[in-house]
Image (cartoon, rainbow, N blue to C red; front, side):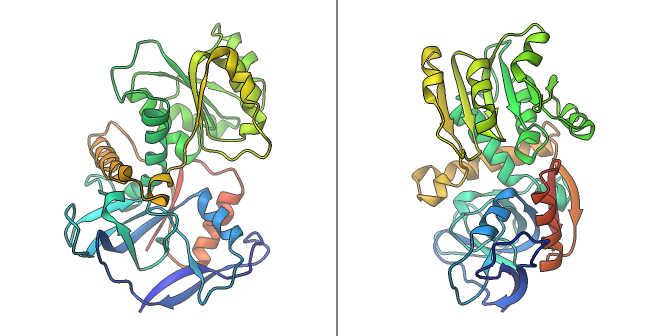
Length: 339
């Protein structure tokens, strides 16, 4: 048996109204096939944890284990595993459909896993997998940028630069040689995105086109939308250059008018980091490859951890605290819980 934290069934209220995360015990899983059995050392809490917690409603024999960011040690491997061995320290974001990382042990497909950076602390490394994968795929797959050797002088607008994805996306875009414009509205978030490397900061609570053009710049080559796509859609369509590219990770509440992009022949794409594992695509292995690169870049000091706050231990009470922080919509960087 092992300790775990899960969501009580039929509970959808915010954590400050009804505590709906519970400590419980469940069977320790067994690794088969391409799976690694990982002993969890730390987890990172993301908006997806809160979203899934609120969606749990169907009857189940036991609570649903959340958690899609983890660092731990490989304890055992399945018969088809070739990339790792017991004792390896690994980090990953896992598979949306499977039991999460808020537990003592977790099964995860090796093709979604990377060797953890060696020069970072456990919390610093645990903060990185989900957001780094999301930002990497958004920039280098959906926006078709190169990690280096892009055309000089290109500019990207990152809406919500202080969040988990924005914090690492700024660094990756700078690494790729782009001029980075990031949005932030509070003094502390402005200071954070500047620390991450943003060249120009705009206030997303004011007109983005007016602010940008006041600097003498008319438009941007790329846009990464990380918050409120409904509220910013017309601004994005106005600011993007002809033949530019836009990618977003946020859900829209209303139909998007793609016709606004047609005169400029703009490419628009969604990024959901779990698409590859959700559909068991052959490209799953790219997430292993990307995490290996991210790990090296972190160890080399080219990228820096976006850890902002570390809590402990991994139990229902502390997870409730972290979920409440995420729900406030005022978090900066990442929150990690050490086990």
